[in-house]
Length: 305
Image (cartoon, rainbow, N blue to C red; front, side, top):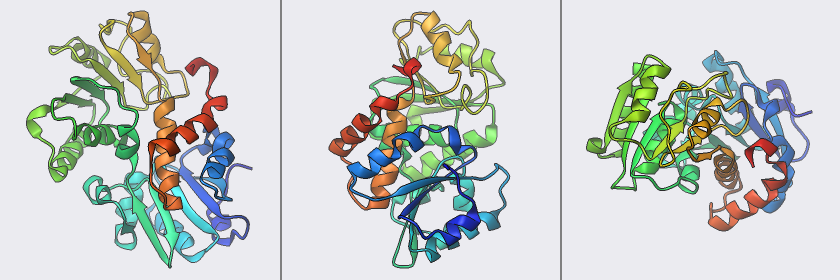
């Protein structure tokens, strides 16, 4: 069984456990490759998915934190869809071992020990290892993935980036993260959009982006794409979908216009590398990432190759 209940987390007495907290974790290939990743870190871990609905109340997150703190057999958690809500519910009870936790106000990794639960926000670190070079970036989506991209671009001083979202509140939150991180606001633009036609116009420019990122989740978490089939991609624009599974209509649309495409597989592997090295308490290095990538390679979906 890939999944576990919160009652079972509290009572777990087996091999050291890593909990995978998401909405629907069963479809992730992390379950297939996890034993290889654990072996690369020389850890006898087991992985179980804890599926919580989007509307999970704060007390459930606090109960999860209590279970992690109180059960020595549970060594940590990898958090996906609940990063922001878990932080809001449990910030006072998490020991931040990563300055980006306070900057992003989210947590994507929890580790346990000494009666404490330590929190990390490792998405930007993971993304920094796989982000292709580009001077003009258009990011469609201003949620957690867009936040990671913004922070990753912070160290690339010549890069200009536009972030677009249908939610003005998401753009406001992203702007606040940029301010807390000290990112140069002159290099950033935040554009509210009503739908795919507006996104098509942003792909057209000016300036014409060299990299267009689908950070919306459309194509995996929900069907569709943030752009239409008429989006003016071309051979000088790299289309990158942060999804590695699902329909990925965004990449199909870009490829039909002759644009090079990249899916989210490398980011998926780097993301898990960042989380599991934090739980193991070892550095995230290029060597560890290479080991994780080699371990995961046999499981890569054929359509992603």
